[in-house]
Image 1 (cartoon, helix red, strand yellow):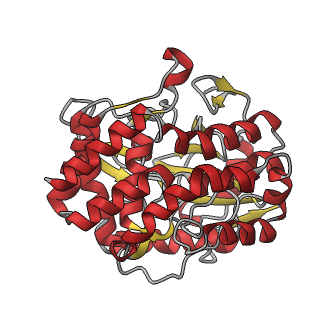
Image 2 (cartoon, one colour):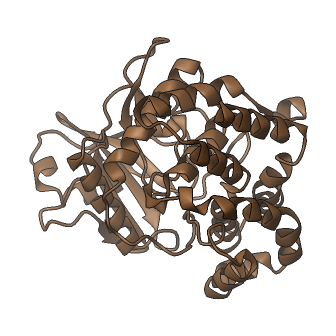
Length: 381
């Protein structure tokens, strides 16, 4: 176990949040009678290196569970309970999502001081990407294809979940800006409603940057809105949020993790996020000075998805238009998190210049243009 966690690049850094302690885990698990009744003493056996919350695997006798802690400034009780309701819906419809556990009083969220806790069954399979930072690509085309197939099945299971969805918040995902006829006004409204985001953006000429770099891409999405059917989605389909049947080349997805960015958006945007998260190595720039994408992984991901749910020409066109702005709204929530919750000046600037603007700007250069052309050609086929 380590005191360091993944940073915003390839380096390991000091965590934003204190690690889950064994004493803390025992206090929380004491509220789950069936766990407490298991002989033995609870011990933390692994701590997650993911940076924006604190999580651990805890073992007690024959029972092993996954515990996650959130600060109330990042996650509300209502939002977390909605995620748990979504997880139960997915399980009822065949999606391999670990079960959310409840206390003796029937609560799925434990509140203690300034923190909220959730406890889940441990996912089946191997967590092959547990030490891989977000943004790094799949290790094989087979993994990419299986991830695409699993995503299509996830969307099928999620399709009838009827919750209305969440408005933009800290570390959340949405389509409030990208799906609005007046994206600038939509952004202004979000900033007015989010004090922390407003404070974070004061140092930037954000409206001018938004109009210059982001609005033209959002305008390219507008003609494709008929293809954007509303439904609940995962929001962060990365290989590290999946477990796998083995460590062999032919391993396939076993379980699906982390619904923390789930919300009502559209399946095509979830596919765009999967491409952006897994097929463009944004961290390459630190090693080789450029950002690279791999169309082999893109094709494998989409081939796997279309084994289950074929995409129409209109849906391919919408996917291509969505891809450059798929990260915009989460980037806004990251800016607020870094500026107003953990008070990191360096990461606030990185989130604004690198995540909000940098991802969109890359799609206007030769690498991004080539990727979009490949998607367009695939859709034409």
